[in-house]
Structures are given as C-alpha cells and as structure tokens.
Amino acid sequence: MDVLQLSDKKTVRLKQYTRARQYNIVILSGVILSSLELSILNKLSNVIISDISGETIGNSLLKDNIEKFAGQMKMSRLVIASNAFLSELAFQYASDVLTLPTAVEIKRYRPMTDRAYDSNIRLLWIGDHTTLHYLINIAPVLEEIGIRYSEVVLRVISDKYFKLRNMPVEPVKYKLEYIYNALNDCDIGLAPLREGKYSRMLCGHNILQMQAGKLPVIASPVGTYGDMVMHEVNGLLAQNTDQWTNSLSLLIENLGIGTQYGTSGREIARERFSTSTIAQQLLEVLNELKK
Image (cartoon, rainbow, N blue to C red; front, side, top):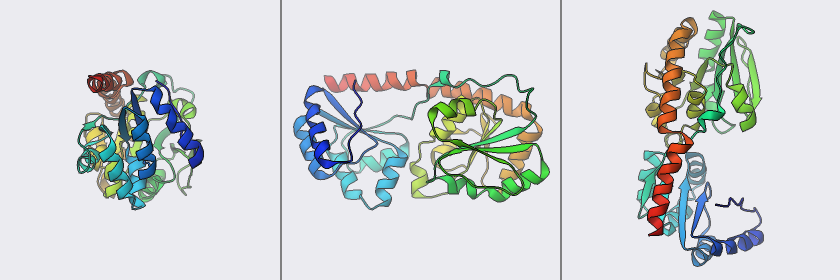
C-alpha cells in the first residue's frame, strides 16, 4: 500500500491520477472529487473505494456540494462509512456501503499510574476550531465547577482555545505526538455535542482517544457519541446543564468510579476499535473485491 497526498494544484493532481494504473484498488480517503476528476480516475483505476468520515463529508455538504458527493458515491465500487448515519446517507447513491468505525492504536496510549507529583484534577477536551463551540456551550458548567473545586484544571487539545474566569485552561497543540503524552495525566474526558445534521456525522475519534487513555468520558447522548459512551459503564451521558454539573461533580469527588469507567472504556476500545480489529475487517472486504 502507498499513501499519496493529493496536491492542491489541478495540473499536479492530474499527473498524480496516472499512478492509479499501478494498483488494484484506489481508496479516496477524506476527499470529494469533481466529476471531471472522477471521470479521469475511473478510466485509470480498476476499483475505486470512497472512505468517508464525518468531518470531511460534513464540511462538503455544508457547502452544498451534494452533487459532488452523490457523483463520487455512484462512481465508487464500495463506500466505507464511519457510522450508521453516514452509511444511510451514502446508501442513497452508492450500490455497496460498509460501516466501519474509526480505529485507534491502543498501545500508543499509556496512562500514568503515579500521579503523586500533581494534586490537580484535569478535565480533557480534544477537537479543533470547527467543533470548539460545542465545548464553549458548556462553559457555564465549567465556571460553576471551577468555583466548587479549586483543584480542577481544563486541558484543551486543539488549534484554537478560549479562557475561563474560574478555571485554569491548559492549551495543547492538536498533534498526535502531543496527544499521546497529554492524555497521561488527565482524569476525566469531555465530549459535549448538540443535535444537528453535522454532529450526527461525527465519528467520535476524540472519544476513542480518551477511552484508549483510560479516561472516563462524559458525553452528550447525540449520534455516535451516545453509542460510544455507555452510561455508568465506561462513562456518563449528560443532556442538560444540571446533568453535566452533577456528572462532573460525581467523578471529581469519586475518582475511583472514574477509574472503573476508564478501565472498562479502554477494554471496549481494545476489543471493538483497535487498529488490529478494524484492519482485519478491512482486509476481508478488500479480498472479496479482488475475486
């Protein structure tokens, strides 16, 4: 397998497409092509697979690119969708759709066992500027928690940040090499979301990362988030301000409960979402396409 980053320049892209002749299968991951590009690639490749994620498709559809999306789905021999909502969307145009969750490399996440050096309790949020508003929506909750518990700190892994009056915010750059270490000394993961078409498309990779880091996760019961966090098993579901405040207070005051949820979450992630598990499922599908 070779991975090729498509150029932003159309002339360079056309040259890149000629490489498709060398391969049995071309997987378009995280990209929606124009009808002209699809036509060219279709003549050069044996099999086209579209791998669609929530962020990619969400941004495309929000820009009213439904025609480009539909064209690529029709042209694809197989569409791989990261959740059920995207699968249903793709089924409107594609002949074959597979729901395959996002994977996480569990072994890269090594939770810290000795926290004696630091008495702070760290809340963690992972995202970027396109989803930061979901965290800002629960800012009143975080302000209240900051007043109640002076030892609580919010760590934000993103490309954009904000400040709170009553709680310190620790900014961390959104890069994988930083994320692995930044999760080690955190205690509670946050995954707030609001109802909407775009939020239904999100794959919940941030939750997987926190679960791989053995963190209990408090999440909104929306879309994939509500499926990945099982209430009082690997975290807590919170739908309104009171539930968010109560859930945070419970885990802050009872870190042992959070440890139980975190352990359960990591085991579930290992069994259902590890790279080895998802890779095996993908391999079986690719072998079927070769027949």
